[in-house]
Image (tube, rainbow, N blue to C red; front, top):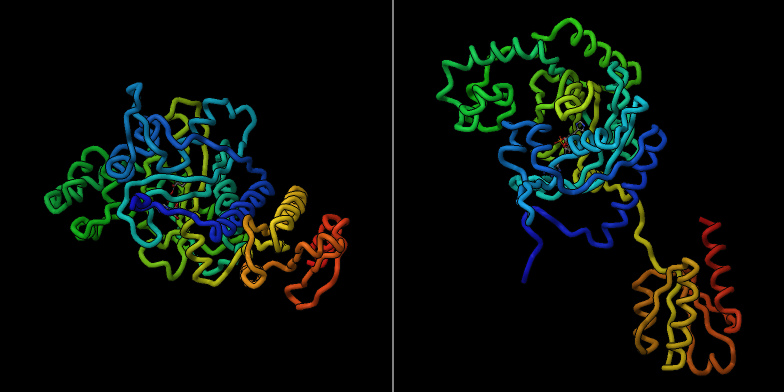
Length: 424
Ligand code: HAM
């Protein structure tokens, strides 16, 4: 049997309703904050991520799904959404009116070792805010993320916050890092030995135990911040505190992308195990320029949909009950089957969820199926009912029955459906 590729999963109809509800609520929230949906292609030119995310990052070096198409182009399934949004922002000259706000929802692909909460195809919800250099933009993004989780009922969260400074602060830090690591170079993993010259800051992000040992007693980047970056960070913290959003400073937080400048943050949920980050983001003041555009500072965030759903499951929160048919149509005999098929189709065209058998079955089997599918009503029509013009309508909740005229059957059921809707 052919199975779904490792690290991917099917979303079955029962789970789909949760996904739809979650996506719907996130869309609504973004609209309230003035963010417009931007849908970018699933694959992009490989160069976009090599330049955007950064060579030397785990994502670009080890995790991309890259292939050559029949035209000889190197393409990559998007591992994240920020670089594609920046690409679209430039391609469509969306910098005419700033600040500009975008959100996205969709699949991302990373060749990682699958485990609980870590997939090779996963889904992200993300937002990107362009053209706002001030600290309140960082606060807006973190606040939106925080509110999104809170509105879903997730409150047991921690926001980790750090500042990576700007190019200037980092140049000095990079030098100091190299100086401190030079005597311990042979202790680093092979990958980080390569990073030492190319991208030494990335060594801080290495998860291998070998490197962790060599990374102790290094100075913190925050002690190298220039006065402007320090002030920006201070104001972000003050803004969050003014809104009552708890954020904990974490000097070790570096995140796995090269594009970040100044603020970075991660939102972690309790009890998710090793993969506890439900979202993360930060400021990227140079990426638009690095990808060939003008200087437009930006800040953004992305959340893992699967991880949000895991937290909701852990909390026992169901965003939406599964859709059940409103009425089960139970025909007895060939003539009634076709008659109810027509009736059911008319009801479906009005948007009424109808369970419609496609074959003849015994009354007993049909009543059992009606019970199982959770319909509110069952309509029974046999040859006799067709002749008399009176069908039997059963209330599945109360167990009561009533006669209903076949001549007005569609109108009568539609009326019942409206009544039930108004009671909800
Ligand atoms: P990221 O931290 O790599 O950031 O991903 C954001 C979230 O996506 C993570 O916190 C996690 O919830 C989820 N996620 C990441 N990888 C996986 C995986 N393999 N399986 C399941 N879920 C996963 C970014 O992608 C940045 N582009 C965020 C950003 C937007 N920064 C600025 N703007």
